[in-house]
Length: 259
Image 1 (tube, rainbow, N blue to C red):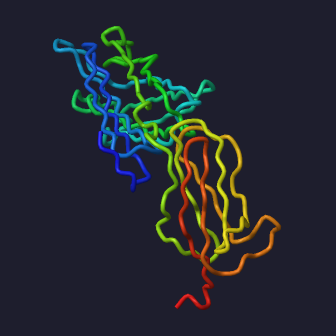
Image 2: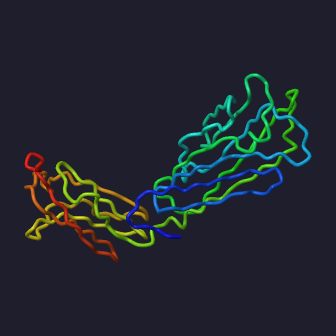
Image 3: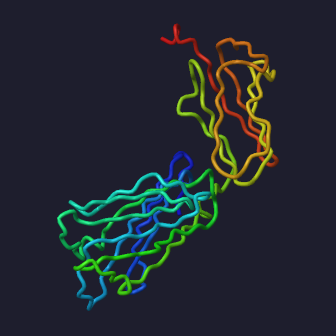
């Protein structure tokens, strides 16, 4: 997997098929190492000799809300009525049917809905998403659920862990009101980030605490530790951890004289 240190956002796409023959067709594409957005497509495929007509479907999507954050669900069945509710355990209950009573076609079942999740608070471990409590209504409203099986899919965030610790160069090293400073940690570390002036005198402590693995950021608003506004000019940001030390230069500019 190629990781570009200059990129700071990850799109983790997961195409998940819950197959009636108990075969899961899935793959994961990892682009960069942070802030995973997960797109999961729930698909139901008919058994080869199944002749039942599906008029409606209800199912639950189960996940650990301390590891994943649900953002939205989108029906892929054109003209279908798709509703979902959040249950107390953090899971989702989904219902899909056609208001005019039309059969949900096999091609629609194979591409039913997309569920979007976000990685929770720099979570780096394995987590699973389950399809559960499936109820399918047949042509006359009868339950034909026994004709189907369900499955699950495991998402591995371990490869998303940062491979090293460093402070990012900001998009622009000069600022007028405030500047966001971002950094990443490859292990739990005591982090100290301080602002120094051109005379190498410490003027502001931004962070001094133990922090978890992942990507983090802090903001400097141009004031020192005594809440006094600092003069415009060049400053140095020094980041220290247990095993890392580096610095970047930033410039505090007067917007009136910025030209």
